[in-house]
Image (cartoon, rainbow, N blue to C red; front, side, top):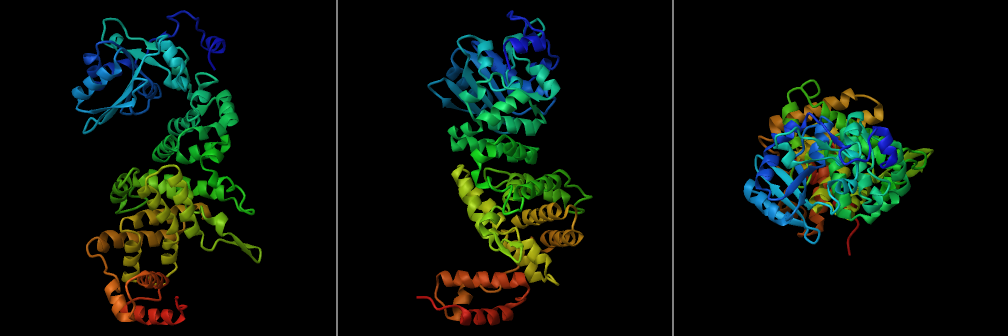
Length: 496
């Protein structure tokens, strides 16, 4: 991956200048406000390394993440940068001298400062993960009189142009096993082909990834579900064996008593990505703009778009636990509830926030609601309002799109009847629900008075029975609710 083979591949010698290369896009770096600002306050030699240069080489949009290698006092430079850009400095690793500055506002950016390796910039780059990330440019060369040159000792520019992701060295994953997950993320996000030798090493060392902290694994998975190409990245996790180490809860999905749950889950995820990528007026006439606004929004650590993709992949996570066979037919009664529990435990194990794990498990638990609604001969105002109220309002938008993705993956194409229901429900949500949200048929106080029960779990049970009756189409008004709950209470076993 480096050394003699690399020299023969690129035609380079080992001389100090053999890897200094002209790169026409360095002019864009010289015009970058962050780079100019850091150069203006730096008292020591500083190199820009990694992601900014990689994205330029890949002709990808610039990410607001800057990595600098510093020959000097990194703490002092971080403080000066924070003052210069109005950011907040903090230590990533105070002992190692690594600092970060987070700049918020219109020019939001993240600036990382780390000490230059003792052996210089080439030694520094040799410790990095992939060749496309092992390129650098010294800031003073950008603003001097001569033509700036790219420092590229491992052929990263050629690999970027060829669409290849290659490890800098065979030991790159030993020093930091999380880099194997990063390979999957970079491959899926930028459409890079993982070079054969690098992929072979990843497959052979996949089990080492568990040495990484749950928080770092979580961050890679968050990035994978946030960016593009998520389904391809998940497939790559399974193809390399990384999935068995990172999400062992899904290790048996390929064959659940003859049912290929993995293929179905990946297909639903692909359909979810297709919905997000084609959310235009042809697909959702009259609602496309408002749907895009919803999915680009967020309430916690993840966007609704990422929550949608997580729910799409994990929506049937409970099937292996709820499987039964009746007359040669597989049944999965209760898989929604078991799936919600599985997903909640999985995400909490990986240190996702409680809000995120709760949201995804909620969507998994309720992914059947749209199909129940579609099964009604007539969807009353009450039933439609109940759907959104039970879905947390805007959460119903995600469930509607999840049903579309699930149906398309299952049927291999559009389900016109379901699509008609989805469009009807979108019209109801934006046309009626947001203006006047339907009140519940019975409040908690009204339930206690009508049925003579005291405050406690029984009130919650009655509310759920009313909700289920509305979804089944058996309860359309207050009178229906009173009648059916009285009948239910007669059948209900006495407690205590």
